[in-house]
Image (cartoon, rainbow, N blue to C red; front, top):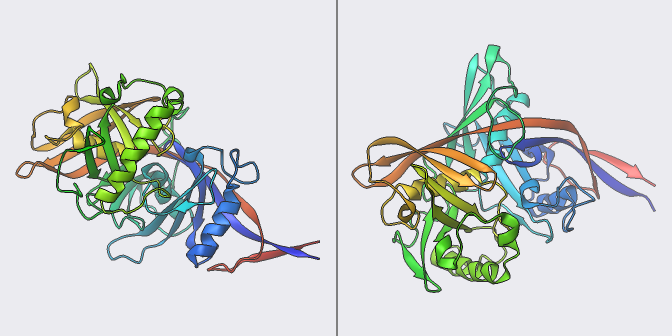
Length: 372
């Protein structure tokens, strides 16, 4: 008996230190349930290797970006991020991803959603997941998008054109408050933690409180069963306290282990996604860590944070693949963060047609192929 395949356009891109397919919203089903079912098939989940799809068998390469013209006043595009689980039939659209975000503006320009300017093109991105607005500044010399440049970021081989991400209203975007419980520091499972919603809901902890140095390799941390179990207990309780409810099937909040360094304004971070250690660092997570580093009373500030000063200051987030520089500005009267920025890069890897088993009703025009 014949069956049908659904064929849709797809652009595979690297955004920062992540990779995944980018879609226009019209290329996918409008119904979220049907959309998520299609994304699982597209990525080859659930399977440890994702061998039957586009996924790379790692949370950093099992991500999806969905872009459309913005429905929000003052914004150019809507960007919906989807974290597709590798080994479970789960698609989480609650968090943002700053690395994939760095590819959203270039993708939108190439797909005709945004007109390129001569020199650089600022694109105001509405993150549908959190409601936050981020400005992405893309290189467009002569009014043409380029991925070529001299900017290098740790965790990626080779230089590319810089994409600057300016976060200005990402504070409390998911939970409603920068510090969802009203405290800069509290105790869970006998350990001091900071529960913060700054570009990404996170649980900040000190590596030393787990008997760690903080510079351990991701594989060492992933193999520490007692550590992973305790962090998950803390994460689940943090989810309840932050108003996120039962987060056992969600990737937020993210656990982060922090430690001091010997070099100036910097902090060492091990960021979890949440059940494995990131081999580099999430961009949104780096913004949150940097923000907490400059705010007295947080666990991050204990790791060498300076006194509050007016204007932008830079902190280097050291991670397993190198480091990431984050610019942070605080309100001197409240001591709270009100803006942050960082540089990422992106690259288009391929564009083509994606074949997905089954017949789906897409928001836009679809191509159905009958197979014997």
